[in-house]
Image: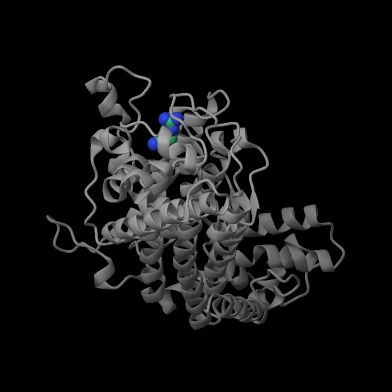
Amino acid sequence: MSVSSNGHNLGNSKKTKKAMPKQTASSGLLKGRLAQGPHKALQMASVSVTFDKRLAPYDIQGSLAHARMLFEASLISRQEFDDISRGLKILDEKVSKEEFSYDSSLEDVHMNLEKALTDLIGQAGAKLHTARSRNDQVATDERLFLIDNLRIVENNLFDLRLALVNRAKKAGPLPMPGYTHLQRAQPVLVAHHLMAYYQMLTRDRERLLGLESRLKVMPLGSGALAGTGLPIKPRVTASLLGFTSLAPNSLDAVASRDLLMEFLSISAIMAVHLSRLAEDLILWCSQEFNFAALPDNLTTTSSMMPHKKNPDGAELIRGKAGRTIGNLVTLLTVVKGLPMSYNRDLQEDKEPLFDTIDTLNLILPLATAMIESIEFKEENLKKAADDPFMAATDLADHLVQKGVPFRLAHEQVGRLVVLALSKNIALRDLEDSLVLKYCPEAEPGLVKKLSLDNLLAKRDTTPGGTAPAVVSLRIKEALDELDGEKRAKS
Ligand code: ARG
């Protein structure tokens, strides 16, 4: 018979029947070692059930699997297993109907559920914690919780990616100015601009999928830190819970939160992508750009200025991205100085995790609604895209094809631009004689041919170019990719 640190007998089921002390879970779960309950101030700081109750369904799922394993390993009897599973099912129903009443004096969700189970079914409930610590329990709950929630986030992300591709398809060959440094640079397609976000968000999805495979390693069996000497069968628990392997190091399993950090990091990156998209929408809807408008139901007005139509939704996306970065920094900071292995600081991992998930599930659908309904002002976009100075690079490229070294061509065209600006005329309206004076190798009549359509159509020399034909191909590929993902889901 082995004896745990607080003196409770944890032997096999027959022996424990006799040895089980009177004071069990129902009269106070952790009182053996300490003469007094916690100081009020400690108790208040200890409470996590106010937020970790969100783990309850996963805690119950984990406990059910753990109890079955204990039975299969002959650590509890058939009767005890039946009682535990009956009790846990009752608790699960209460939790899902929000009828379970949590007691802050019991610290966390794990103690609340264990106490409720023991109250419900008696002694068998007090056996559930055999060969388990809250340390491997909470690590397991968090993994189950995150695997489930990744799916919800991924579904919301899917909707946004689909909205972007559909909107890009609908925009067809509509051009717009492309920017660097927020200065007009070269014309691009609106579709190309939207598809840039599709690519970013598709990488975010890939990162989530990579994380999911790492989450499928089970911490349970690691005990408080060193595993357990009891003859458990962790593979049974793992297969019941959908884990694909067992943690190869018990210290790591209870001490590490890098997978949560990874999730918070992927999420912060995703939220930053959404924030940049939001910023583009805000600019496009400003009077200065005047490229697009959002529908009334996705804007707000001012409480004072009656003419205002503000893109608050986009601003909120941009603002909420800040908290996802904050959540990542919170967890990194909590973990950075911790000695091996579990430390109670780790209890602080949950609120940042929950907040980031909730934030993503708010801002992803909001971004989707905006992309689905944004109206582009085609005439304004075409006019802005046709800025004749944006043909300067193409003129330099033309000189390169005539044998002029690029640096020289760049200088010649730069001078020509200064001349055109001083005369306040467009590059393409310059007399041939002037063009030839600055760029002697230029073909006569060339500047007139630098039409917007030509500039765009030529950009088909890489798969990522903005030529309408190339962008259409990328849109088609993306739709096929999304279709494949959808079929894999169903
Ligand atoms: N509520 C705790 C947490 O989330 C559970 C683990 C408590 N473990 C301990 N050794 N006190 O971290």
